Image (cartoon, rainbow, N blue to C red; front, top):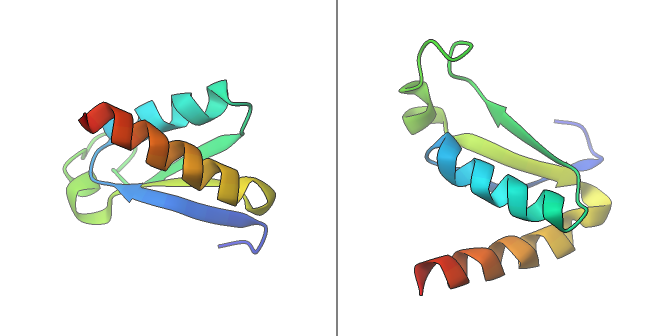
Length: 76
C-alpha cells in the first residue's frame, strides 16, 4: 500500500463502508473503498477480506474522528 494513504477502518460489508464513505465525502475528504469480491460476482468474499476505507494520510486523523463520531451517533 502506498505511503501517502492511511487505512481508516476495515468493514465487514460494503453497505457499512459506503455509509462511512458518504459521511467523509460530505466533510470534504476524498475516500476510496478497497474490496476484493471478484468484481462483484462473489460478495461473500467481503466477509473474509472486508472492505477497506482509505484516505490520504494528511486527512487520516480528521477522518478517523469523523468516522468514530458517526458510528457513535449511529449506535445510540
